[in-house]
Length: 194
Image (cartoon, rainbow, N blue to C red):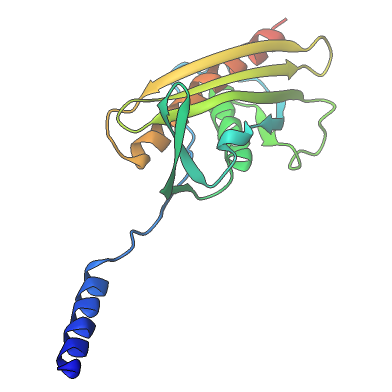
């Protein structure tokens, strides 16, 4: 009898173990927009994205999903492949290069001479969203021309995310950052034409 109970227990545990597989994490990146329709006239200027700050709330590998005004949840299985602090400057620099043809655009640490460059600082105030809803990016930024006064700005972009998956949310964040980049490119263009 004891052998039969042990055998049934072992079979039951084996079947339960075979049925319960852990989900695997998926990794996502932000991406620059492709083919800007409203690029400015070509100018041979240098632009350096010098710094980007990100709220501690979202400075983590997991996607932070907005549940309500006062609640978020961490999606343990949807993760950023690289930190937002390194992805956002790279994406903004790539977007700026498309909006400002002819400009040499880089991220701090890659530029040779930042004294002759337009320096861009970005403080991300809000970076949240939910699959099936929207991604929102709010940023304070400044453009410091090689000569002259720093130009402050604020951008808020809300991009729809109609699909209910993390890949669609990452794409919506990329589009929202493109809108921020478009505002910054406009400030650089205005300053460069004065």
